Length: 111
Image 1 (spheres, rainbow, N blue to C red):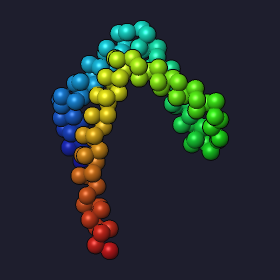
Image 2 (cartoon, rainbow, N blue to C red; image 1 turned 180 degrees about the horizontal axis):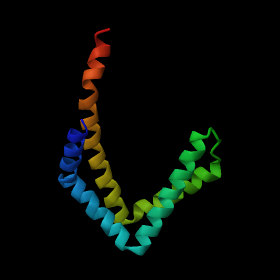
Image 3 (cartoon, rainbow, N blue to C red; image 1 turned 180 degrees about the vertical axis):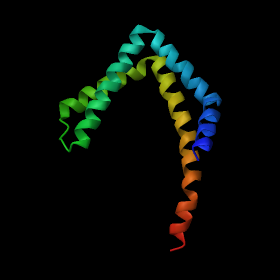
């Protein structure tokens, strides 16, 4: 199973979508402003997720700030391209996941 997983991982790395995401990440990394914007965006997202996972209330001012940071990040063309590339790659991964769990779902459907 591990060998199949390694093969699948390698095939994923060879897809146009993976290569596009890799290039987009390189573009953001090479641009100080884009990198700073994205790092801030990611940090805010992680902080909010941590609060949610701990069952803490997210304050309205935190949500507003997160929206502002997201808006700023998405106004940057390089970040936007990177996020779009990530979404495209995620769709492929979701498709593979659906295929992998189909036999399990089929068993439950027979109940």
